[in-house]
Image (cartoon, rainbow, N blue to C red; front, side, top):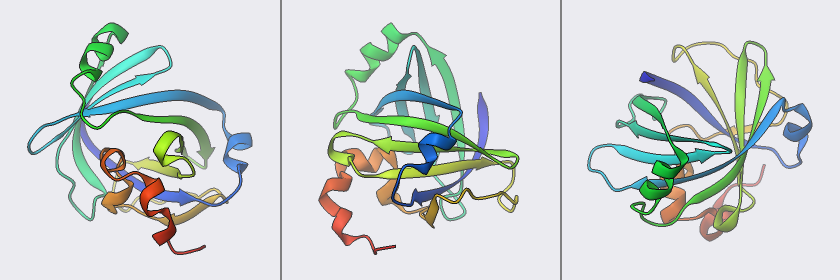
Length: 164
């Protein structure tokens, strides 16, 4: 799969309403291979694995080029050895809202306590229905990029977030 990725990111309000609303959930581990001018991600998701390359963000962090290819779990385990800064560990819940699916990520480890949701869109101005648990938008805020959370985990700066 390759093409433009258009997505918006949000913090999730306190509580776990997203869990009961989810139609699916999976365990994800991912790491990042150093690359200049792109983000190279290796991800395992339950019993599947993927190599993803993302270009620089444009339009306030909402749009960027993405290439993704499924790889074997064995290949992923070897590539994870090349990743710097450790691995992001999270559980992803899929929640349908209107015509869209929100991906809600509950983070573990040094990012424990962070719960974010994102929705992928076909265009930057596409309308979507927000579930009740969606909080403040953080699209384009680099602190919430998974690759940044490895370097500067949520546990180190969570107190600086405004209270909702």
